Length: 159
Image (cartoon, rainbow, N blue to C red; front, side, top):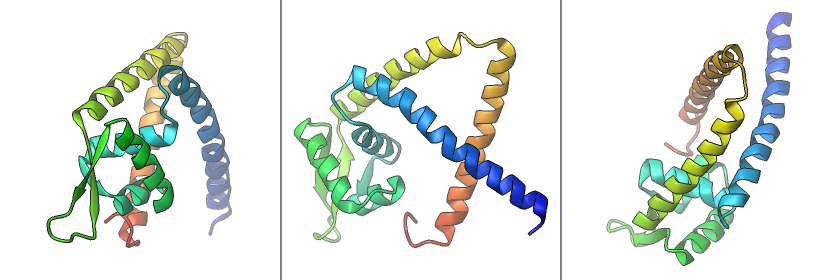
């Protein structure tokens, strides 16, 4: 590996490791003031919102969570009528999870409130900083999706 690549990789690792806590802190604080759901429960709702129905294993795979943790989160969401269990008609051993209308409505409302709070913070930035952030965040998202697709292509998880 070229020395320049190694430096770029090391720098990327450092930046990505630093970004997560900063984003997490911002969103977690917002989430906690808007709902009694924890971030993990919202992640489950989000992935079900995108995919409608998934097995417990698929949820765990998509969120990089162990199945027992997913089960605990799903049980809490079932108690709140936000998701429901469905038996797979082809294999009764598989339990699928589907987001309910209440789950969709609550998730969308929480997402909207968090987006509005984030908008207030972003409006304080200059036009130049906003342009930079918009482009950089799009590039980061696209690269992370590409990395995930290439990783999952070599993995039995989440196919």
